[in-house]
Amino acid sequence: HLGDGNMETLTGAKWFRPAHLELDNCRMGNAGAEALAATPWLDSVRWLGLRNAGLTAKGVAAIASSKRVGNLRHLDLANNSVGARGLN
Image (cartoon, rainbow, N blue to C red):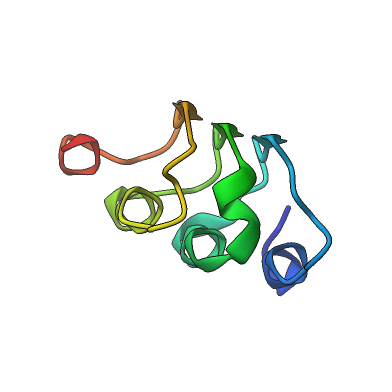
């Protein structure tokens, strides 16, 4: 579970440069997705797993609109409540 400030700790790690990041079942929610979208090291991620992360269309929009996802090649959003709006 990456709620309660834990997501902010992860996104604030300046040394972290993952190419493959699995955050499945972490239940970070939209606030966690927004923090992730703003993190400087997100541009190193090529594979991002967010299965069952507690996301809605708002969280998906934060990730998709981030200027740091240009190198992302795979995004797994299975088992989130994104709805049709989150897929557009």
